[in-house]
Amino acid sequence: MESSSRLKSARLPKKALLPIVGKPMIDHLIERVKTAKLVDGVVLCTSTHPDDTILEGAAQRNNIPFFRGSEEDVLGRFIAAAEQHHFDIVVRVTGDNPLTDPEHIDKLIESHLQTGADFSKIEQLPLGCNSEVIPLTTLKKAHEL
Image: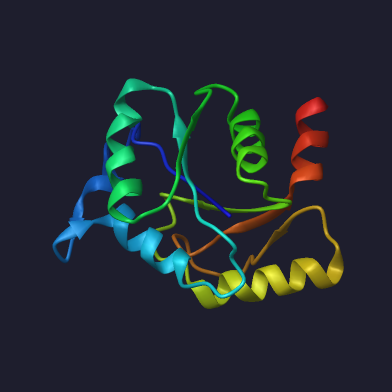
């Protein structure tokens, strides 16, 4: 499983670090994702941009690994993080989706595994609640193309 976040936002800069009920939004998101039953691991994955260095603290506070990769090659960054952590399937949850529900993550993973799809997402969820499931093989193929 991979959690992705970036601090560079035109509409609301550093939104992942804004406090909600006394702690940064990213901490709430990580806690939610960690409770999904079918997730084998959570990695906070971000770019090598200097502004994103502060996210390492969120990973440390939540006792999860931290991965930094190319700012421009996001797909390559996901592939490298998945390979480093031996993930065959990536569940992508972004900082733009702070209300991602662990039960929906589990349902999405179950559906993905049953169908063998190359990409899975629940379309009916409100903005801020979604995640995606993508096999590492599909990420590599898309990256090659």
